[in-house]
Image 1 (cartoon, rainbow, N blue to C red):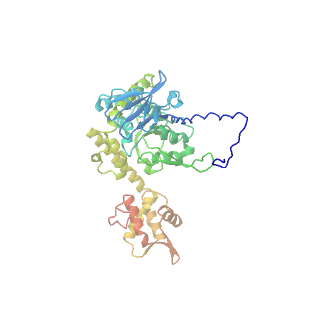
Image 2: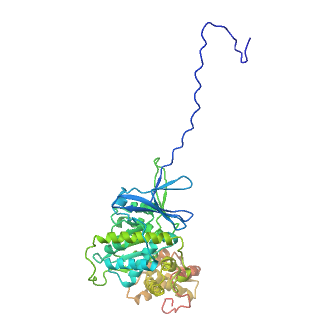
Image 3: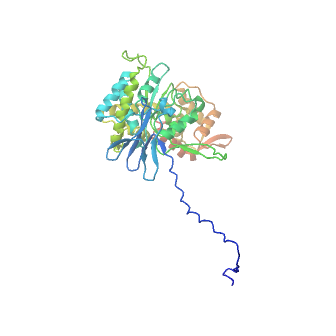
Length: 468
């Protein structure tokens, strides 16, 4: 009788072949744990702070974990709720073993802010010959470096002078007590700096900034231009293994201390520095010619105390708008307000304010003597009293040359004045009756440039050719 499925039953003398045993049920594949994530530091959304400790004597690293409550624990790892395990960088990492990056070795006891500042000032005074005023600035900048990620904008610290004037000494001493200092002076190119800042997020210590990196000035300028404000990463062109373009964004925000001989040509970049001119007086007699070995131990002890201060202060500090400086430009206040928010001494804040206002005034005077600003002033004065719908370039050249003659400068030809007007001020010129002119329609641009350069828009004296 046929079975379901159309097969017939037959008899046979052969022994029935037994079926193979059923395979055991497949065991579910065990999920492989994700590899741990090495970190130098991390701030979690709930305010938990995690910092790597490095003990050179025992060649070990651990994590110092400060809970939002202020309770501190030391551990070999920290597990996030999502399953990620954070671990410290290995003690064998060359950046740590070679002192390229300096970390605390333990969580110290900072005491109080006044006592900590005094200890930082005393340390700086022992090893570096700075003016008394800049000693105070440097000490507060060290504190700022340890809580810089609580602010959105930062100034930079700079030591400027010829070789042999103490720039490198200042960088080593002050840099050694800053937050996660990255000593990049020995780097052969700027490229590693992008990666170090992105991975570690510490304080960049850079010597001979205007010489060592002369072949990579553009890249260095990107770091300095983007590095004083949060949210401005630097894009670098990269390629993946398939040779496809794969741009990489590097975070370069953070405090920076540099030594250099000259200044930067970019006025906007220059405005971001708090500068000490080195070599302007004889070296103090109590300053050691060579840095003693004990300085490293003192710096490590201070880093330990400063870490404790970061744990206590980082989640509570912030910008104090009431400490903005009257008479300082909005850009200047934006740059320096983070530092002033940590300066509790009102007299010191006033001295810093006076210095910065004077610095801006000197910069404005220097700009006023530049060909660009002089031309803006001349055009503003001429447009204010023009009786025709245009200014001829010949008349503009005569007024400009009269203005610069008072400074003893050589006159420019009409052709050179035309180039200055078109390429530097981006003004339109046209030819009328065989001569080149600047139409009145460009006056609005000139007035805007005058405001931008701090020139008065009051009725200028046409006889001088310059705005009042």
